Image (cartoon, rainbow, N blue to C red; front, side):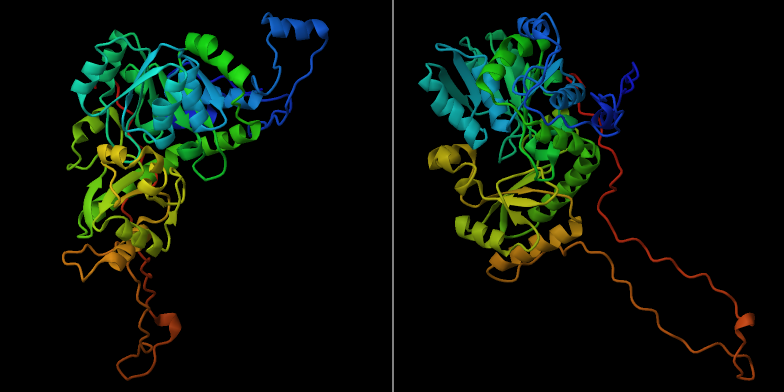
Length: 465
């Protein structure tokens, strides 16, 4: 049987490893994988009581599964939420969080800076069901005030946004939304639960793509929805139960294993991303760099008030538009071209032709996404190798030698020792080995690094900090 966790506050790393732990009668160390579609009952009476809700028993893995329950409890502990439900993908989580709550005649206000599929739900899907939708510029508090001067049912936003890393003032928008009668749904994928706690700033619901940093190794899909127990049980659970966007037990098990190392992976990724953002800012081929904790980010103060670190994503604009962006991406030798993010492998994306293709050129211009915009998800490779790879790819698009270029950060080369003749005495005779002084060999220095892997991140800020 699993131990009960101590009745005292636990730090995120402990929650990531121990949260929600449950053992079967075999007392396994690793969480058990209940790879089963259904469950059996002791008798017909127990089955009836289970469906009536008067008995607690697993019924069907579309409704619930022991492996999923462990992951749900672990994520709820980490987020500081009362309850959690899992879905097959991150987009299923966004869809379920919204459609379970909304009905014809309702009104939704959303930040314009959304992932492409989230933008499509608000702009295209909701109006088909008689739900009014309105977009605002997420960084413009006056637009939020005007939009929420009229009653609304739901507010959707992501901060930092995909891909331009735009911030939304969580506390201010949550206050405005609640005054308008709306719940606030926050897509917290870029920040992760370790860097930002939307519930602490007044959000009602937080959604994740567990595919990203939580698995973090490019293996499985998954989504999570977190909020108050009453809302989850009465509003969300009936929708999930009857529409079927269930996560598979195997995916839940893999994500549980990924969570155990999130507190080690994410600090390394954040520190590498910050170093790479500084490097890119010095390159003449780069028109502008976006990273929330850089001094030149227009919302740096807000980022530091809401987040514990700047995150693992860096976005930048290349001079020369799409042609330069494609040449740069094709010249990379280590970083892969992919539309995913939050992976152990560094990945690069051209949003205008992939993730945000279908929002249209006019909307992309409003979002600040140009044909030269590139989104880089920084992984766990050595930062010196990543900088060298980026440098070589930028050289490939440079029309001429670029002045004031920062050299790649590389480990020092240790030269081979020079052999000297054996020592001799005053007469020139060789000194016997037994009489030679034993010099202590110098230990080789460890390769230079821009971060310490074990250094923990600070706790995510709370409202009023």
